[in-house]
Length: 93
Image 1 (tube, helix red, strand yellow):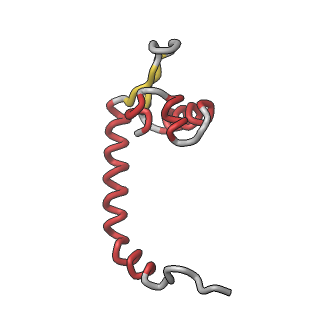
Image 2 (cartoon, rainbow, N blue to C red):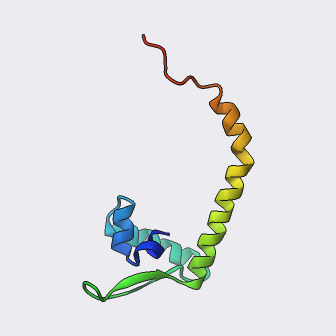
């Protein structure tokens, strides 16, 4: 998602608090683990390079977001019940 928003692997990494090397490694790993690459990058200096999601990347991201939404809805009542067991602030010692 950060690559789609920024158009850059380095900017995506920075927005997530990670180095370019780590961001590139994660993208490379994802690209190898899916049937088709999720992100493509073009080399170039300032203003000439960039990265973008492929159609497969857009599809994978949309499916992942749908899973997140459905999972959150499925556990919402349980999370509310769990939260009701927790105090707002621990008592002073």
